[in-house]
Length: 454
Image (cartoon, rainbow, N blue to C red; front, side):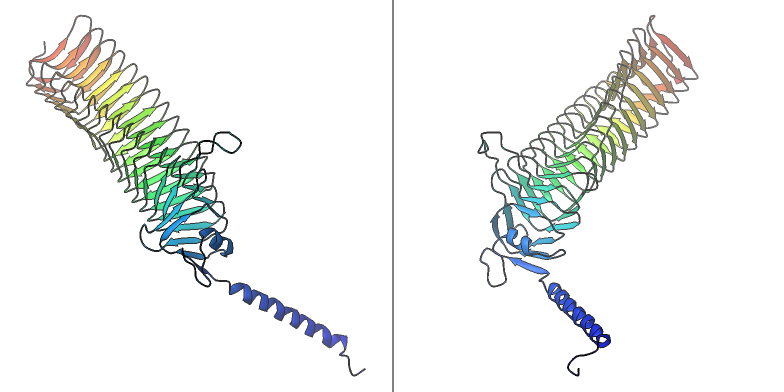
């Protein structure tokens, strides 16, 4: 009987032994390396491919990649940080027809200091069907941060972000030369760009669709073959202190009930309109510049609405502002000058409302309303426009009150061909004709000063 312990003493010892075993296993698990090294010529404890390192990495690990060219496809399934050593010295190139990096994890993933490129797509799959178009980086879950990365795709878009709750943050990244869009955000996903460059894309620089949401600050979108930024499918975009330069389409296109906020940003040199709103798109602009484009600085059509505060629309190839087909534009304290045709044009139920500001030195008319356009100018200065300060014709309607209409070529205000205008409390000086109305027109004047009306 002396060989055996009583059950009352044996049970606590068994519990203690179980606890010690579990603690030992936990300690061994905690000793799994949290930093892994990838190098083209691996030594003991190092990895020759990123895929092998990711397979071994625990959640929260840091994978350090030494300079080299790595041809592989990465599927990130745990929260990790992948860091390239040396700026631009670590290149990840996908095989044909596959993405370079696909993030498939709910959690935080960081990619830093990498050059990421999706190779050209194969012409056909093995079964003879059309091959998929690979993106360089595909994000389908979680939150992904890219810092100081260079991204391109020879077959499709550079970065694709999709799915509600998915977010990608890009800081000081360059997305260049992608065959399709530089960055694509869709299906309720969100992206934030800070200090980035998106250049030379085959389509839009940044495309946001299907309820996507993007914020871009201090970023440049240039030399893209489509719009610099394209919002559609009820998407949202905020551009702050951004530059949209020399894009082959519009600087920004916003359509299909999408919304844009543009603050302290410049849109210059676009082949299409600087900002193009259509299909019920809406935009609010503050302290902006829309300049030097081949078409209108701002075009609003098909039930759209734009509200502009401060800022300038200047030196565009046609008109500063074009509102038509039910588009509505409201400008407050804006400058509209030096445009090749007119300062502002409203037609086909387009509505333009101006509060304060200056419309000057345009090569045609300052404010031109025709074919059932509508306009209100309150406290605006129209000066130095080559043809007229204000021209209303073809069933259009204008209210001009409290304005200064000075030194325009031809007429200060001209109403023709069934146009209707009310001109009150304006200073009108320096034109060949101050206010002129044809017999078919309706003209009401009251309280104006300056040159006599004719």
